[in-house]
Image (cartoon, rainbow, N blue to C red; front, side, top):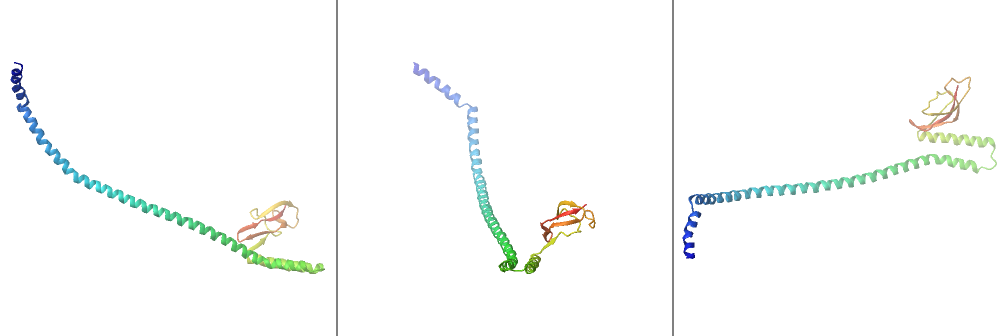
Length: 201
C-alpha cells in the first residue's frame, strides 16, 4: 500500500519539474551559454596580442636600461681616467715649473760657492762679488717674470704694502712710504710678498 502511494505521487513531481516556465528558463540559459563562451573565445587572441605587446615593451625597456647602465659605467670610467690624468698633468706642471725656477737660480748658488771658496779676499773684492751676485739674482727674477716694488716716496697701498709703523719725514709727503724695511715682490699682478714699510705722518 505504501508503494502504490509513492507511485501515485511521482507524476505530480514530474509535472512540477517540467512546467512551461521551467522549460523556458532552461532554454534561455542554454542559449546564453554558447554566446558567453564565444565572447570569451573571441577575447583570447586580443589578450594574447596585448600580452605580447606588453612583453615587447618590457624587453625594450630592459634593453634601454642595459644600454643606459653601460653608458653610465663608461662615463664614470672616463671621468675617473680624466681626473687621474688631470692630476698627473697638474703634478707634472708643478714639477716642471719648480725645476725651471731652480735651473734659473742655480748660477747664483754657483757664484756664492765660488765667492766663499776664496781665501783672504779683501773687503772690496767681497763687495764686488756680492754686487755681481745681486745683479745676477735680479736678472734671474726678470727671466721668471718677478719684479720688486716698494720704494721710498711711493704712495702707501694696503693691498701690496705692509705698514709696520709711522715715522716723521720732512721731505716725504704724508701717507707715502718713508722707509722700506723689506722690498716686496710680485709676478704679474700676483703679490708674492708684500713690502714691509713705514709710512710718513
